[in-house]
Amino acid sequence: MGFGDFMIEYKAIFGTLLGTIVTLVTTHFLKSKGKLMFEPQNWSLRFYKFVTGVEKEITSSEEASYALFNFELIIYNNSETPKSLKDIYLEIKDEKTQLNLILKNSNTARYSSGFRNIDEVKILNIAPKTMFCIPLEGNLDENTTKQIRNGMKVIFHAKDYKNKTYQTEIANISY
Image 1 (cartoon, one colour):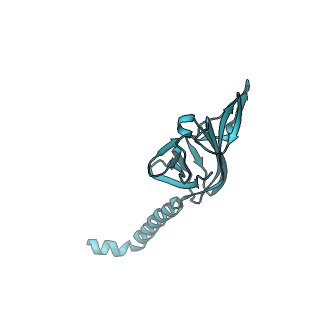
Image 2 (image 1 turned 30 degrees about the vertical axis):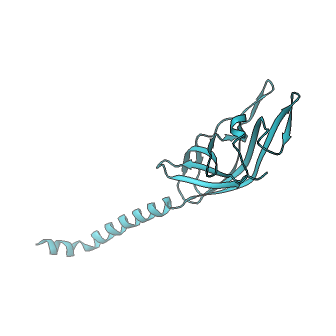
């Protein structure tokens, strides 16, 4: 009995095993295939100046003492596997300037002794086939605020565990 006879004798078994393996590989591939989708909403950038000890909202960055921004980011994971994001930040840029800003999760706000503490967004875990909205915010000090100009782009950045970069344009600054 040669190898050819052996293969003919057991072709049904080999066919079943090969079919099972191909099905498992294809199913695993299709479940992990999918992507994260981002939709920004309600972008707001406000400039403030201290006038005789009281903070007052103003309309331009040139005279501002600081600035606050906030927006909501809707994230949808359309794959059947959980996804994680790290290295999360907001970039404000134009041809001349690039500013990287820390994002904070507004849902984590705590008040103590008249101060508001908010946790920085470091990692986001997104369950399979899930959509959720995360309110994000941050602040700019006086030096950073003075670099803000009309027409600058606001871009959300994050990386997954394979260091694949995700970028989503949030807004163009206009005031």
